[in-house]
Image 1: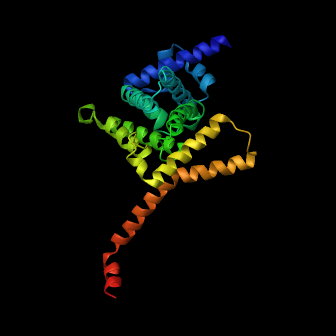
Image 2: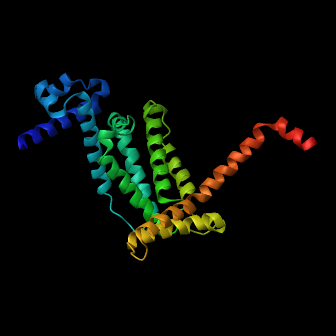
Length: 263
């Protein structure tokens, strides 16, 4: 058993090195077997088929990615911690593009299932700290997925370009844009907006209740309150989208609008 585990790790290390050095097209079972010093039947016995090898390789990449995330020390500034986590994410993707595409760009659910869920859990915990401080203007879940989508999109967009055509300032600009969307400013200017204030308080209460583990409410009451708080936290975002959509609908048909005005 120990020997099989070691052989499996050796194969994954060899496949990862081959992937990073020569790209996805180099990952034939024959090439991976030769790089790991094993016979192809051994590879099939360990991973089933090439799809199984790719899933295991994605999980292997996530394990290394998580090791870097876990090495980041938490400070008393959750926004600064989030920025450092974003920078690590971008750095990992640009330094290991083929591996990153395998992890985030192919929807390999078997590779993503456990390590990927832990990755999202770490991101959510960081966002929840911002919510607990009363600085989040939407629900923790929505903010987490918004950050994830923008981070992955920014890295994949850069990977798609030749290195000399990439804008090195794009990831930082993308982070600042998302941050402005997610959070209330420290000086309270944004807090003057009543809806944003309610959203921030709802998100903060949601996290405070989760952290405290209060037993005052029954399970059904807690579930209902959680749903209400998430809806309140996301209401400002939804209202803004609805306003924009309504504006678009009004301006998309100027002839019809003018006709009604003339009447």
